[in-house]
Length: 101
Image 1 (cartoon, rainbow, N blue to C red):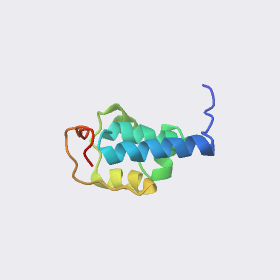
Image 2: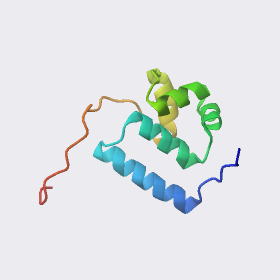
Image 3: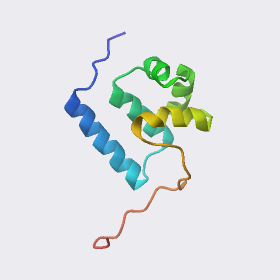
């Protein structure tokens, strides 16, 4: 299996900006967010899981959208990015009409 090349600092910053922008707009699913967080760190699923204190299977299942993680697991993972589990809309937000702010 080929070795992963960690993202450069500039790549990480660009990924982080896009991540927080999508989170702010409310158009990112938990599986998408999990994969984005892991990719920002440049770690494999196993490495990311060990770093966050959860099993690789938890990360794998969340990224697939088949997991049923505990709130504690999600908070442990999200804490690194200054996030925590909260109540969010199940529907993606509609874009604001032009000219409204």
